[in-house]
Length: 455
Ligand SMILES: Cc1cc2nc3c(=O)[nH]c(=O)nc-3n(C[C@H](O)[C@H](O)[C@H](O)COP(=O)(O)OP(=O)(O)OC[C@H]3O[C@@H](n4cnc5c(N)ncnc54)[C@H](O)[C@@H]3O)c2cc1C
Image: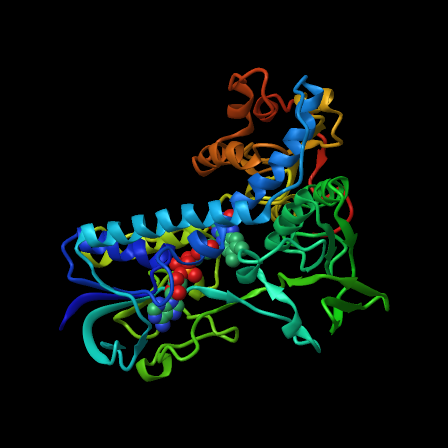
């Protein structure tokens, strides 16, 4: 065999897997067809967060005036932001490549396809590998409506030549609400169109309600219970027909309506790898596919599509196969953030999930963050703990408010360790901070499930 391991895909999952396996002494080949670092680095988490920062800076400039700064906020230069983002991403691409080279992996900057369980076609040649890891990620999809090709998807949003004056974002998931915050914050008239009564299906209901308020406070025009019907074009303008029979005229329609695994033309049939209805590669707990020597990791398995999950899976497979340290990745209590403005941080069970399991106590606080008592910006922070009524174990922590991602990452350690509400209560707070509210939540708000509205 040419390789002990061949990894297809150089995103978060594939790079980690290849690098760690090579570090364990395996002879590793890795193929990437487009850009090192994959979705997260190039068209996902990283550029998205730069854009969120850009939108927040504009708001901070407004707020700074109330703290005495003589700031005259001019317009926003879209091209400056994109150039800064591109420069940083080039730096990150180079780091990813260097890490692989330093680890001793053989690099292929091309598309790879499977021709059998142990054979991969790349650059017109066939190479052989003992083990194969598929880490090809996913791509955004469009709904099947007339004129869908006139809309953009998240991949395009990072390269727009100019910022639109008006945008219609379709979708209620995290990518939709994040881009709503970005465009509204940069000065675009932003419409958010979603099928459910509230955005972020599956998140805690209190967080969803609070998010809808914050989006509206930031000037996002909300269209709940609404779906797109068709798009037409006249000149530069797009006409978006909606299920409420209205027609929204806009510069840009942005579909954030879902993603699908990258499996087309990959040769899965030739190798015998089984997929599910959505095209996702089916894996067992060890991330093995239906073919014993082939593994799949990250978004291509379409389970929990998050970068830290993808890297953890890549690492675990490398350790298991080549490091003599067999281990599994638990998808329980995976913390996650939504970089809306303000952001959301969440870990563990929602109130509805907890109520289904058994009796649970709910602690909620909602307050104006300290700085906004001066800035007068209409922004609230909401924090919530879900506690098992019988064992006192904290089952979930949810927050929407400034620094939520940073705060909830710390809480995730406590929850993973099985902390009880009594442990939160005996922890001394940091003052003055928002985070201290999580350790001073003394009064129970209600019993889980007492509030109507299902998630
Ligand atoms: C807009 C957006 C924002 C996001 N924000 C966050 C966030 O804030 N936090 C978070 O945790 N996650 C976020 N995600 C999700 C995160 O980006 C993914 O979970 C993560 O990138 C998955 O990594 P992966 O390695 O599985 O796939 P990818 O990163 O997609 O990598 C797959 C790679 O395989 C390559 N490839 C595909 N087919 C082949 C082939 N046949 N041969 C060679 N190469 C191939 C592709 O070019 C790609 O580079 C976001 C995603 C998007 C789209």
